Length: 148
Ligand SMILES: [Zn+2]
Image (cartoon, rainbow, N blue to C red):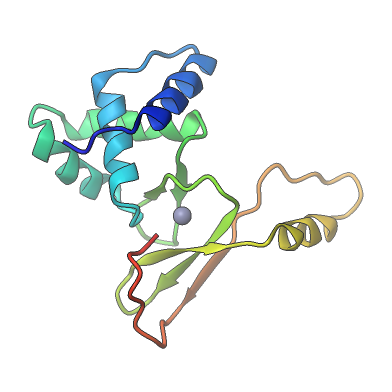
């Protein structure tokens, strides 16, 4: 079973508690599945991975856990047009790049000044809590790195 690292377990407990929720084995397991392979899996993929170690878990439970993790701010929902939602546990400010050949989604680090610039283009009185940047294109070179 991919063990939830202690620090992640604490973050999970804390984030759940802020929403008045408790950690459950299922929530912890789904979170650990996401942390284990950060390749932006869909709910179905998370379900398949979660079942390996927890055969009794249902797809509905996985969906609920994912929704809870997103609500708690521990996981981001990544939505590419006309595609199932993918899930990302990377909480650093980053954009997503989808390779149209493989469909894989990569994390792209965003320098903090980029975000500051973007927020400044908003008209007076508009305040963004959140900015989502999605790239869609092709990878020219093979990347050795695991999709992050
Ligand atoms: Zn991501």
